[in-house]
Image 1 (cartoon, rainbow, N blue to C red):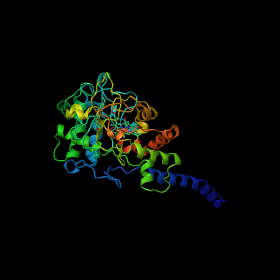
Image 2: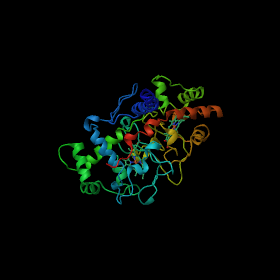
Image 3: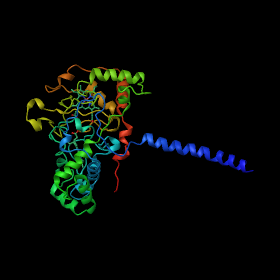
Image 4: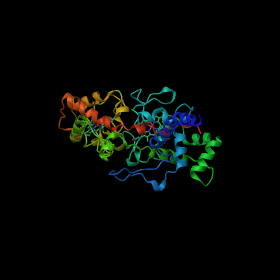
Length: 351
Ligand code: HEC
Ligand code: HEC
C-alpha cells in the first residue's frame, strides 16, 4: 500500500517538477540580466559618445529612465519623453505623421527613433544638436512639445523625496538636484538603448540556427546594391546628411540641414536614419509621408524628384521588379529586434 502511494506521488509530482524546472530555466535564458551594460557588438565601429565624462551606472540609468517616463518634465505635467518615443515602436510614435505634444499641439516633424545613439555625433533630422547631454533641452523648451524650462523642472523635482533619494544614489556626493544632472541621467538612459539582436545580427554573427530565406538573401543583395551607400551596415546609417529626392512639402517648407549650416549645398538634406526595426516605426521620413514600406520603396524606384540637390548616390535610377521589391522588404524585416522592443528592463516602473 505504502509503495503504491509513493509511486502515485512520484507519478503526479514528476511532471510538475519537470514543468517547473523547465519554466525556471526558460525564464532564465530569455530574461536578460537586470544590470545594463554598454556593449560594442562584434565588428561594429567604436562608439563616439564620451563615456568618461558621464559613465553609465545602474542608478544613473534608473534615474534617467524615471525622468524619461515622467510627464512632470512638461509645463502642465501632461507630456513625457515617452509620449512620443515608445519602446515597442522603436522609440517613436506610429499613430500620426507629425509629432503631437503639449495641449495636442502639432509639431513640424516626424519623431525620430532613439537607438544606438552612442554612434551618433549629431542629432535631430537637421543635425541641429551636437551633444546628447544637451539634446533634451530642445523638446523640453519647445512650445509644441513640453513647453517648459530646466529651472522649472528642477524646482518640481526638488519637492519629491523620492527624486532626492534617486539623485543622491546616482550622483553620490549630495542630494543636490541640478539641471545638468537631469540631462546627464537622461543621457545615461538614452545611450543604453541599444539594438543589435535582430535576425540580421544573428546571421552576421553566424549564430547556430540563424539562416536567411532565399528571399531575404536576394533582399540583402539588392540592399547592398541600392541602399548601402547611405544606410551603411552595421548601423544602417552613414551618420551623414543627404537629400534622397523627396518632393519638398509646400506647406511645411522644411529645408533640413541648410537651416543649421546656411550652406546652399545642404538644401533639403536630412539625417540618414538607421533602418533597424524599420518594420515597426512607420510612418516614414522626416514628415512621416509614407505609411508603409511599399510606399517608401516606390519612392526610391519611381518617385525621386529632379533636383540639383539630389545626392549623387541616387543619380542612377533604381529599377526593381515586383518580386525584387518584395525581397528587399523581406530583408528589411530581418532588422527587427524583438528582444529589444520588449526588453523589460526598459519598461516603466513605478518605484
Ligand atoms: C511631442 C513629441 C516629443 C516629445 C515629448 C519628445 N520628443 Fe524627442 N523627438 C521628437 C521629434 C519630432 C524629433 C525630431 C526633431 C527634429 O528633427 O527637429 C525628436 C528627436 C529626438 C532625439 C534625436 C534622435 C536622433 O537620432 O537624432 C532624441 C535623442 C530625443 N528626441 C530625445 C527626447 C527626450 C530625452 C525627450 C524628453 C525630454 C523627448 N525626446 C521628448 C518628438 C518628441
Ligand atoms: C542618398 C542616400 C540614400 C540612399 C541611397 C537611400 N536612402 Fe533611405 N534615406 C535617406 C535619407 C536622407 C532619409 C531621410 C529623408 C527624409 O526624411 O527627408 C532616408 C529615409 C529612409 C527611410 C525612412 C526611415 C524613417 O525612419 O523614417 C527608409 C525606410 C529608407 N530610407 C530606406 C531606403 C532603402 C530601402 C534604400 C534603397 C532602395 C534607400 N533608403 C536608399 C538616404 C538614402
